[in-house]
Image (cartoon, rainbow, N blue to C red; front, side, top):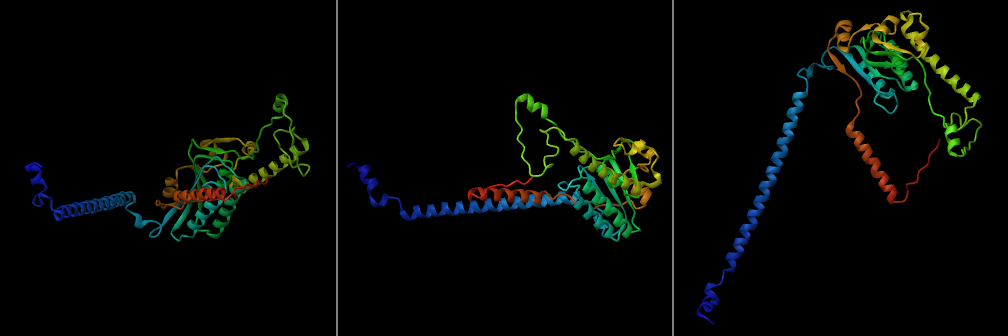
Length: 326
């Protein structure tokens, strides 16, 4: 063994185990401190971002928030936008709930229905129409006006006809007082393709309007009778609401529609003006308070998530069978 090997292997030259342990402990503690610092900075930045978002939201809130419906008189406004259906935001449930809240508020001086709708369900439209009549009779001192933006047709006009007055823009589309049921017929198509139609029903007329079967004159007459009956309900509602303001023109109830300017000439509307114009010049209370029932995006997401989880659970448990009744 060389002198160098003897020197390296001597006890006095071996690394001190206590020193090594101390170094490792220091390194571990430093790592812990670094992790804590990173965590604290992470919390700090999250709180900072939360504060930043709150500031932004605060800037978006009107300065006169304290002067809204809770503190002073206002004109209530309710949006009826898009298709009128029990599955849309313009459903009878949503619109009626908004109207009831608006009329109950003691600070409400008038209600404006701002309509931009091509129509939709005659039933939903009728519900809203009838509720307008009920509320305006109950709250005689609170008038209800309809303001048309782009379109107020079919079911949209059914609703508007119950208003005390209707205001439009010159370029609005108004009217379409009629009832529609459409479909397709593929009888000749399946014959050319050599397809045999096998329709089984319990009930002589259960397959009425089947697109792959020839038209049955008796069934066609029956459906037309239903449409005529619904159309008459529509006509009666418009005549009751508009009264002598309607011009004596048979085309009014033909399903045609007109510009806002023409609708005023025909007595379908009373004048020109926006929601702010009506609130300022007609009601005399310029402050607008929105009572529209808005879609809860988070609730909708939660509902979909819950439905999806349920579907997955049913598939996992073998209980995913479906049943359809028509």
